[in-house]
Image (cartoon, rainbow over all chains, first blue to last red; front, side):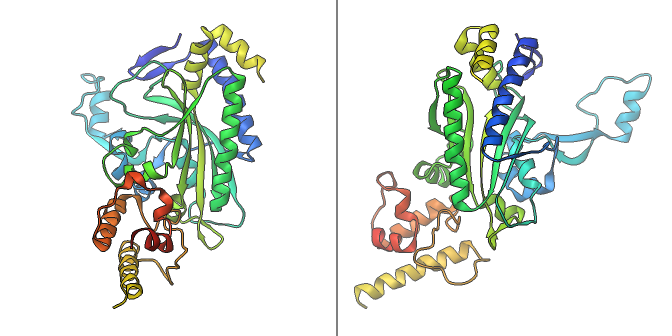
Length: 273
Length: 82
């Protein structure tokens, strides 16, 4: 069983770690099948680039800025009387934030580029989200997200998601996991305003949801938003992009829950490959 | 002013509104341009756009009964709402 070092911050035990590894092997195979090149995604994202992506306007509650202690605070902490951080300790910004999704880092690598042919990239990254409630491996503050991002033409972006959806359905079937496919229910899409209305008419994010309501992953169409904001050009115009995302710990949770224990879950994930 | 001229004036108003939201837009806005996929009709201004169509058509719009394709191009918008 996972242990928790802080609220929403888990340590997976050996059996869970093995399931995690075996599942990510499957996700990597899907990424390879979709034609993606693996890269290592950045552990932090520059605030300046996130600003260009309206991150702070859309997700201020998720932001986790990375900061250092000020010189004064460092001296106090290292001194004989100090040693214990307090909320009063002044911080100095690094101008970077912890990622909330892996695709940001992947898309940022292509910024200000004119691409002649489509690009497909994959990475697994640690992601961080502030939540009101944390719930085992289903809802963590720090977790892993593998993504497979497509950048290129509008048709290519749609085709990527069509193929990705097939792959996810096949994988879930092989692992004995029932999946529903539902339009996203993040707060981002749920207000009463314009975005919610347009998303009801034309959902851009579809989640793969397990019977207990856990969203295991999603496919997401960005239209040409990232192409325009990051200056990625394809065919003389802002590139279109789309992504497939897996919440890895949530798959671990669901596989164990579905098969009634880690040992059986491991046998299933090894036996289905 | 006949019906066609009225409709042209209304389409011009829609084009002017789209241009006001996309000041960098260069060239003509073609009747078949996909306004949704190109994000010329941005998600954050969608309600405002529906309001504009209600004003131009003089009738309330029940968005629940519509599909995204009804808003996709100038041609389709004119056919559906004007």
